[in-house]
Figure 1 (spheres, rainbow, N blue to C red):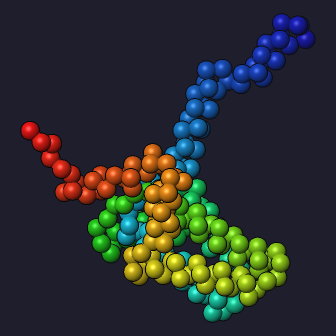
Figure 2: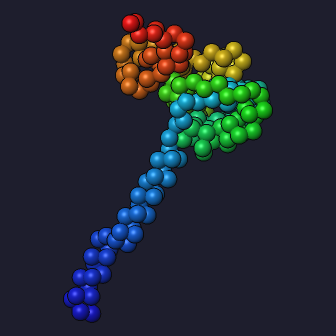
Figure 3: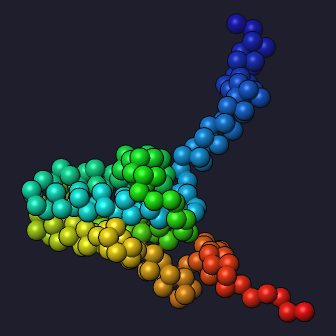
Length: 199
């Protein structure tokens, strides 16, 4: 093999596909960004339906002592915090099937809901590790019970505990205002509160 042929093949390895490869890589990055994003705003009706599904999974885990249910519970929270409803079967059911049949969408800020899902990640992961990693069944069930209580508040009463904690952290300056402009400025959510500019 001639040196020129070898150099050509090696340069082809260094930049696979040339411009076509760059376009494919750009397309892949765009696709990954579209998958790994959390919606903003979020449909409150769908979020409450998801919370209802979490209550059912938690109740089944506790009532029937079925630890394997912690796996889909934990997966669901991880999927929703990373991708919104995209990779979550419960999220897909809620957004595409159940919520549209219940009520018109009620849009709310996305970052507090994502924070609430992250709290669900923490609780469900801790319960999974307690049960399967350490054999602490009772401790795992207590954590699942706390998670079920928070999900019940969201689903039935419409009180998002994670969203409230997010708000407290924003007011304390631990979460910057840029993270959620709609949270920092209530007039973005409620235009009727805007003051007209004086003449």
